Amino acid sequence: MEKISIIVPCYNEESALPLFYEELKKNLNDFPSEISFEILFVNDGSKDNTLNVIKDLVKTDNEIKYISFSRNFGKESAIYAGLENATGNYVTIMDADLQDPPSLLKDMYKAVTEEKYDAVGTRRVNRKGEPIIRSFFAKLFYKLINKMTSFEMVDGARDYVFMKRQVVDAILSLKEYNRYSKGLFSFVGFDVKWIEYKNVQRIAGTTKWSFWKLTKYALEGITAFSTAPLLISSAVGLLFCLISFLMILVIIIKTLIFEDPTSGWPSLVCIIFMVSGIQMFSLGIIGQYLSKTYLEIKKRPLYFIKDTNIEK
Image (cartoon, rainbow, N blue to C red; front, top):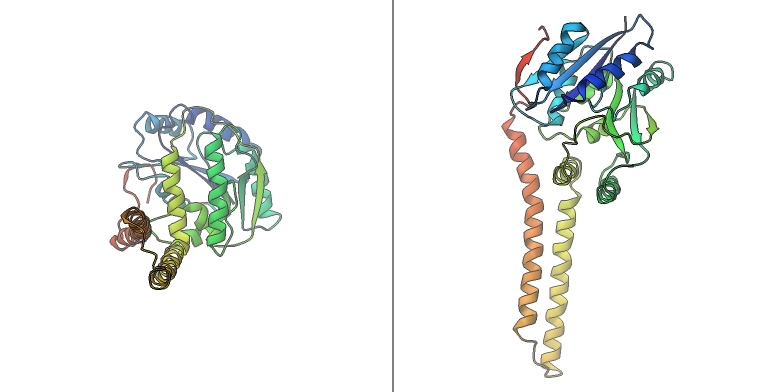
């Protein structure tokens, strides 16, 4: 019997969960009866009533499993925990806010089982409803990271991915502490079909992703999959060394041949500030990579489970 595991990371989603569950079950009824399901909710240290809502759903549906973290570890840890505890032949990840339409599940399943793809990803073709500045920087991020990496990250890609067990095992074999799922899904390769859909607004609640959090997440992706910033830092340093050497020659020639005195201290101060700023910028880039290395070598667990109904 085939089994599909549906992983649902949750953080403060008490208002969205009942609506999500109702819509999900309605779409699961369209699948053949010989397919079984496992709905795995991962409560990422929610501060509202999310866990109690999940436990109420468990009472009425034996297909539901849940994991509750001891605190908030972040969505990446929730995804990893879900993948690690999923038992299905096929695994998918969905947000609880219905921005990942459950109506696509059947097409994703057919693409894997009938069209012989290893995985099916989803991507938004527009960002309707998002702030314009966020959309601009999101597009800019994908352009930059695709120039920095040896593999493509699809613009508008969601974490809503339907995978064979082989793909799940490949992702789980990547044990890094600093995780960027969109990059990991692209890194492992395999044959992926992309399904496009228009952006869907949250059914309830508010987004947990502020502009600052998205910026940090973007930096996480760049430092996790590219060393290009280090090369850029080195190139800028070399460029300014050449410029300074040429400027020294110019000053010597002007002084010896044309008897033109050198400029005063204002220009010198400006140069010092500019060069110091570049040095600090370069040190900041190096510091980012060192901090990631520092966190990796500690080998701390990605999460701690406080409560679960999964029997081991």
